[in-house]
Structure formats: structure tokens, C-alpha cells
Amino acid sequence: MKRFPIKVILLSLFIVINLTVICTFPTSMSDNDSEEVVNNLVTFLNKNDITVSPTIIDKETKKVSSATLQNFIEDRDAFAKNILGAKKEVTKNGETYTANENQVIFDGNKFSFVPKTPVALSETHGIDAVNASKKGKKIAAYYGFDSQNALIVSSDDNGKYHIFMTYTIENLPVFNDYMTFDITSDGLMGFSGVWFTQNSLGEYRNAKSVADALLEFSASKDKPNGKIEISDITLGYNIVDFDTSPTELQPVWRITLKDGSKYYINA
Image (cartoon, rainbow, N blue to C red; front, top):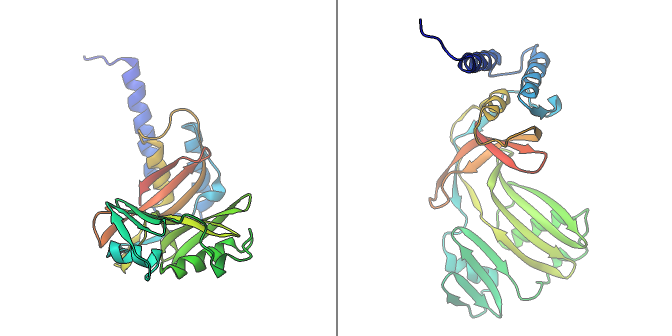
């Protein structure tokens, strides 16, 4: 009779136990036992050196769409001229457009507006920590960006406000479709990012449950070694291919760790 080393036997048992636990978690946690399911999940993850609070685990079944997005910038020459000023002479050197020492720079699908001095706009007057996000949205609209379906947050760096604008589909963020604006009371200091907007909404389906996403993360070879603390879990999308327009979206669960690092599990 063939004998197996004790390490092989223990490893096999560990795999079987993990698979058994994974199979016991329902794809939807909207039943009456949802609290127990979440607690069992948290206990299982803790045994695998992953700490997560039950309060950030969504118990509802979520819907995602097979939406497509299209690049907001269809004509780079026209875009640069609009940003730099339609009546100004614009020169082009490679992927850099210049007018009066103000520049629009392209790097792949990413673009940046770099003015020589802050651009004075009525929207920047009276900016403070309370109204920075609202003013950032108005500045985005001023330059022609569709900010209606955008999630906007701001931070204050000693009077310099960083506005972070993320595109959304049905209130779910597209994590890698975003722009940043830097603003002070003197004016707009510049902006950069990529900006794809909705082309088609597509059909809806149930997203992978957050339980399955967490279990998949726990088994991933890409997760960091040692003890892990999860601080946030958010459902959204990622753009698949920036070089294609229209482009498809991949529904994902974004898992954020306490140290700020982020991991994405297909949903």
C-alpha cells in the first residue's frame, strides 16, 4: 500500500475543509440567517489571518450592468484648443499642445492641463473645505466634462484643494475612470486624468456575492503575506481596454486594506 507523507495528508485536509466552507456560503445573503452567515465568514477569514469587520460586508444581492463607455476625447486637436482657448494660437510638439505657455499634454489616454499660472475662474472664488467638491464639479462642467454622473470628493492641503472626480454607472464607481483638479483661491492650478462616459447601459445580472469575493481573495496568491486587515469593500467597475472606444467594463469588488493597497476581484 502506498504511503503519503503527513504534510501531504494535512495539506489535503486543509484544502477539503476550505472548499467545504466555501460551498456553505450562499451566493445571496438576504435570507434570515444573513447575520450568522456573515459571522461565520468573518470567523473563517480570521483563521486565515484576514481581519474584516462584519459592518462593511454588504448582505444584499447587487446588480451589475454589461455597460460600455466611450472616450470623451474624440479629437485631441479640438480638445486641446478648447481647453487652451479657442481664440489663441496653439502649437503642437508631439503630444504637447501649447498656447501662451499653458499646456495640454497627452500620455496615452491620460491628459493633463498645465497652466503657467493659476487660471482665475468665477467658480474658484470663495473656495473652502465645505464647498470644494461643489465648485470642482462646476469647473469640470465649465471645461465641458460630463460631471452629472460623477462621484466627487475633495481634500484640503493647506488651502490647496484636490478634487477627485470618478465616473459612475448607476451609482457604482468606475474605479479607473477619474480626473483630479487642483484648485486654490487664486484659481485652477491644473487637472489630469482619463474620462470615458456612458455609451450603452446593457443588460443587468446579479453580481458575485461579497462573501464569494472575500473567499476568492483569501485564496489568492496575489494577496500580501502575513496578517491582513480589510478596511473597505466596494462594488464597481474597471475599464478593460483604454485603447478601444467604445470599451467594455468589468464588474469588480474592490478590496481596500488598512495600508491603502487595493485588490480587485471580478464580480
